Length: 277
Image (cartoon, rainbow, N blue to C red; front, side, top):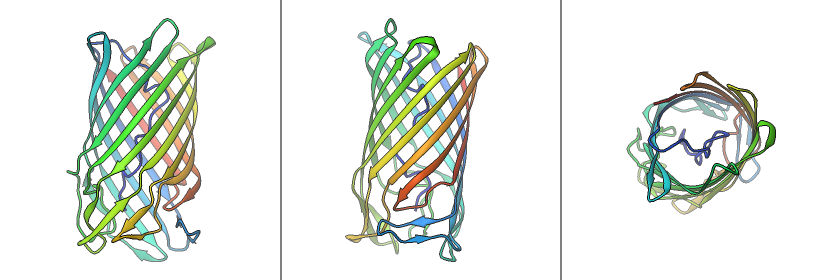
């Protein structure tokens, strides 16, 4: 089990671009708690079962223009800890350290300020350099390459409202040091849809409600299904404020409302700090 195995979640205005020449430095601090495990076969374990995580992510983004097309290369460095891991009373050793670094670039194929219409394509490449101990149940890194191809559409509406829709496909490489440390873990592709409706109710304030749906991602260890997958539904609430014209604070809470094949999140809370320069 890894702590950063989901597709690339987005905030409500991630596909609203900044002007060319802008830099962003973003810091995320995230806590999540889980109190049961649900396998793809329908087995649910709650007694002596749970998993907590605390993850920080540092992200740098630079916007520039190439032949009239706006692009934004970026790098994300995650680090954190997984702890209180247990299933049916069996406890797992905690894991701490760096997660897999992520390299990404957004390319806006539609960038129309007049109609407030923005459509971008964003590949994320997860590089297997994070903490990984073969044979351990919990790890921050995945010991495999992973590619997430995401497409997003941000549409501004009247009176401060906007919506954002994104879709992802995630492909996984094999982890050849899984299970007992000498077995191969493979995984079917994951598909994700994310939708946000946001409202700028004051010049420096914005609120948003969101929904996310995952499909697929069935895992196999040495060719046998493990009971893990990425089937889940999630609801989200977000609130943000620009403290100064170049510094924003955002809070986000999330909860899984349906799950099959993993630990559903009872609560995930995130604080995001964004500096524009």
